[in-house]
Length: 215
Image (tube, rainbow, N blue to C red; front, side, top):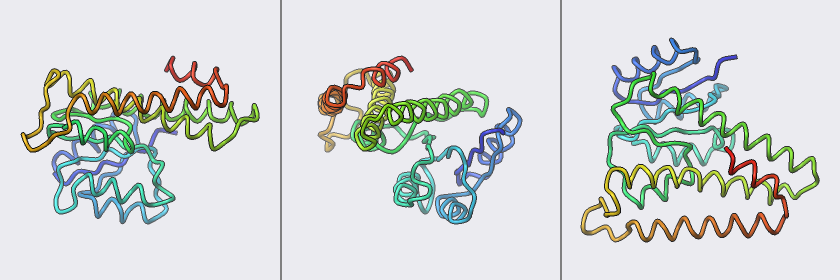
């Protein structure tokens, strides 16, 4: 069964391009023209395997759409890839790390987006397999899932850090009024890594950590 991908982009030509393009490469796709249409579709029985969400939309932008999605119990765990031409800031990178699987800079073609989609879906599947492995071994479900959540955040946060450093070096790309920069982001990553390491030691589930680091 091919993966189902929901395209959310308020630009009709781009929306159609990705729907047709991803269908051509073996995905099952649906397209909606904005955040409100996305929420309305997900209020039905339709459940995609992944959402490709544009950031720069009107009147509901991608960030508001994402926040609303994550408050809906039945759909909050659907992986989301943000797609945008907007320059990323370090503060936004921290925020996005908690709720997306990848961040793709426009312009990009459907063909170039395939690896991002398949990698995100593979990562989610591998994490779930490792969680099941831990549960079968008798470890705490709460702690196992928390460990997996922290890992996922770190994985995304590091990828966003690479995007920022590739584009801006170690300078803050934000306006002068924005005080959150590379050093603050490094502290954010360090705090996450410390929580991950402490929890891994607490539950003594070495195999879990080893598998994740090899992904």
